[in-house]
Length: 129
Image (cartoon, rainbow, N blue to C red; front, side, top):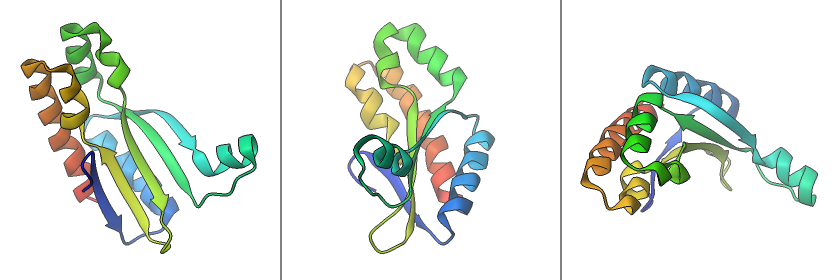
């Protein structure tokens, strides 16, 4: 785990990990709002090569609603990003943002509690991989 992520090296292909993480997110109440294929984007936009790397914008509507009701500008910190990528050793990695760290920017104790619940759910997702 980095200082801002929950991360795991998974023993499966990139493609299988990408599909599995979407299913695990769904089990924890998250929908995938966006899916960015960074390998494709970088090649098209700046003609640079990158190993497989996808950013999923995951959202749990219940928690997003709670947070936005408490603090309208909290939407700047949403959705929760989850990434699947192949590293330089050709390992497949799955990682999620640490919502305790990101939502902690609000300095609101009630939002911190929401962040902890989201952290637990995202940890379940990563650990199930």
